[in-house]
Image (tube, rainbow, N blue to C red):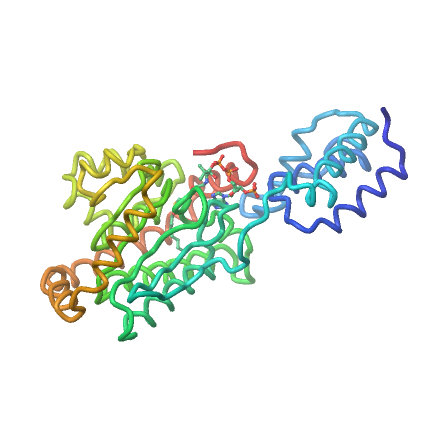
Length: 355
Ligand SMILES: CCCCC/C=C/C(=O)SCCNC(=O)CCNC(=O)[C@H](O)C(C)(C)COP(=O)(O)OP(=O)(O)OC[C@H]1O[C@@H](n2cnc3c(N)ncnc32)[C@H](O)[C@@H]1OP(=O)(O)O
């Protein structure tokens, strides 16, 4: 059946009423179909490499080729109707629990920092880095907090850095984004290096990028057998961070570290445990129950003894780790300006590639 001009206009109004963000992929499809329906095949000059958002839009429109205006109009109406408020309320679209992207709770001497963007696989935004950093600083000074846990809500632990972090260009352009990103990364990782109390990762599902590399700075890593560990830095035109260029070879030996950090080999939870990156793996069905029971028991141990032992174990390495962090952050600043990295981010945003 054809879609009339009236149907098309109604659909355009319905888009504005959507309660839930339909996500970048759908928004690009809507944009492309709208342009095709109103203007026909893509007739704009291709935007430059650094113009991420317009380039992704151009790619989406151009990909439609010579689809007739009529068909584009119908496809637009059908797509909007599949996203309409009635389908949202019928339960077809999952609603995210909570609205905060980082949820911090304290109970029984345990401070829990939970990444809470399950629909985005807990990808870490700039604001989330800042919130985690502030939470670590606060809990390090809180006498009631004995151990600190980082975990994720939903099926992922974290898909790492949010790849849209670098797409909103300020007046200083991509150079400014790379510079501020590098400073943020350095401050963020420094905070993990200096954290004085037991720091535990409860890895509830797959982990990617910085969510994996930081594990080398934790005191214990408990993983569900559903978790995987993936550092696809080369595929992203990027380089290792989180001190992993030092901690990973130390933990698992250079040969295994290189497979992960240079070639992007993804490890299962059991493989990561065998390599020494993970402390213990639990069946997913009993993961939360077993891990939290254990953490509650650990949080009853004498806090000062634990803190002093951690200092004894870690202090010889601190200076080295800070130097490594500084080097890695500088290297990444350069990488973020490279064509290899920009292409990888554009490909992800236009969904030509997935890990
Ligand atoms: C300033 C400090 C910088 C520190 C440097 C850190 C570097 C890193 O961490 S590098 C690693 C970066 N991460 C990635 O490259 C992962 C990219 N994501 C994926 O490849 C996939 O999304 C997946 C394998 C993690 C999951 O695939 P799938 O199960 O098929 O789910 P979707 O792809 O449909 O994802 C759902 C939804 O979430 C969005 N999303 C997931 N991960 C990210 C991310 N890292 N950045 C931005 N957005 C992400 C994804 O786009 C989907 O969104 P919608 O399309 O809007 O629904």
